[in-house]
Length: 127
Image (tube, rainbow, N blue to C red):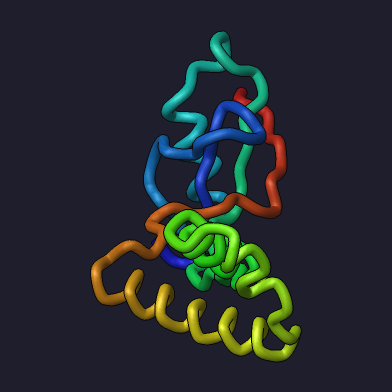
């Protein structure tokens, strides 16, 4: 699968797992017409493949809340306001660093998305 390739489907949304990837819209339309009978689907759809975003952002606020909650559970009342006053710029540094680590981890162990989005969807008649 390469960005910009074409696929066909019997509906304009949902999972587009049927058929091959095509370098031209015309080739995808031809495969769609040979795959589905006109009496089953009068209108089919063609669209272009766009790789799913592979970079994720980690919300440091949620991580800090989880850490503070764990510390409060362990230490009780004395930790009631732990991590409640983290400066915005420090939280952003943590978000950036955590995002970098998570994205590197996804790459290293093969957890990047292997799915795609379909864009530029157009109907065509199945005749």
